[in-house]
Image (cartoon, rainbow, N blue to C red; front, side, top):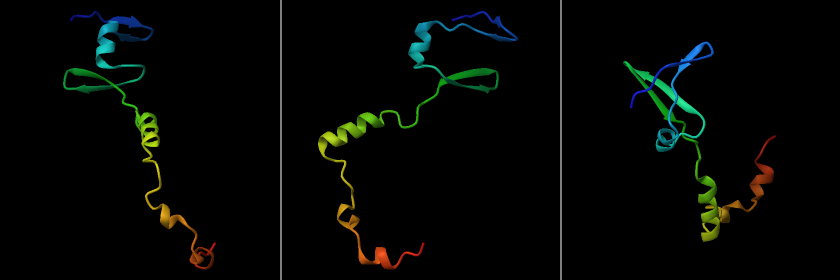
Length: 84
């Protein structure tokens, strides 16, 4: 596909067709890099994407309990050994 460089304020840019943006998975922000004579535009991946659904699924499966729940009880050394 060919595109024309257009003036945008003091910069220059190209218009990307909506189907290309959707195919690349671009929502809002992108990462731009230059490798040799190639400009690379990548969607920015969201850290922790999908965690909400994973936590919901864990709760539904009963897998969201503390691993060391038995050790979570208070011990006498909690009151005597700690110095604040």
